[in-house]
Image 1 (cartoon, protein in one colour):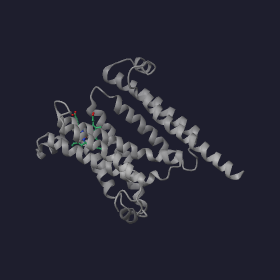
Image 2: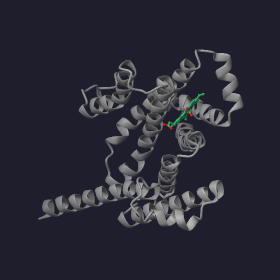
Image 3: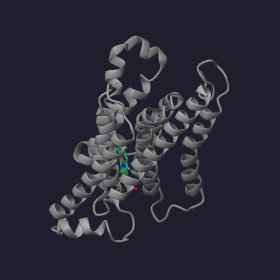
Image 4: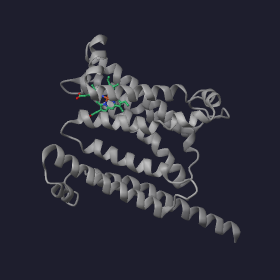
Amino acid sequence: MVPWRDRAGRLSWLRMAVLAALAAPAAWVAWKYANGMLGARPANAAVREVGLWMIRFLFIALAVTPLREGLGWTRLLDVRRMIGVAAFVYGFAHITLYAAQESWKLGFVAAEIVRRIYLTIGFVGLVGLMVLAVTSTDGWQRRLRANWGRLHRTVYAIAILAVVHFFIQSKAQVSEPIFMMGLLVWLLAVRAWPRRARLGGVALALLGAGAAVLTALGEAGWYAFRLGVSPLMVLEANFRAQGFRPAWGVLIAAGIVLVLALVNTGWRRFRAARAAA
Ligand code: HEM
């Protein structure tokens, strides 16, 4: 099956749009590389940019669950697989560019993966993602039956490894990995929400606020532990305009899903009332 056609073989605009959006960052990085726009160490910049897109796509694939449950957008399930496979393809490009950066000395690359813990963690995550990409087809889903769901739930463990890899290699500038950690806490909380209980507006708001508070506390704890900075000072910085704050990022992301869910519920009720009148 070609990726731009749906299961019934029809041309799908949603699939085509998603495919274009998935390919765009790769084309952009390639264009910048070809035009000397990646700075003094272009290979390293390409490794980083592709790695960033990989983790973003991984998180977007994970976000399909709250979007489907909060908004009832079941069509998103159709493209989740594509986004997950794209995350793996970017991961493959990430490690390939890393090997290119090291002049294709594959022995050295392998030794580095064993020696450096952030590379070991990233490698385990990438191998895990490869297993999920290979078994993402309908054929494998049929073959593995109930085990398919179990296997594919390991994507949350892979996301944890991805964030830890991102976090360790970030050294001093940890705002974005902390934001990703907070998002992951929120995604895990939404995933763990009991199936019997409806994931309504109040639940979404509480989970979003809880994840944002934990993000702020995690950030304060990290700076206190690593640099000895007063946790109160870091917490206070959330209320002063000082660039990107991870906790606000988590709150805004969860808030967007909440607003969309509320608009969607209101619209459905309005349509049901109109149909009944
Ligand atoms: C789940 C798998 C992985 C994910 C999600 C991932 C993601 C990332 C991200 C987000 C960055 C930081 C980009 C930035 O700071 O701008 C990064 C950096 C990096 N990653 Fe990965 N990565 C993964 C696996 C790997 C593997 C398997 C390798 C190589 C063996 C690798 C090698 C690197 C290197 C060399 C850097 C740049 C470090 C530096 O220049 O300081 N990554 N990765």
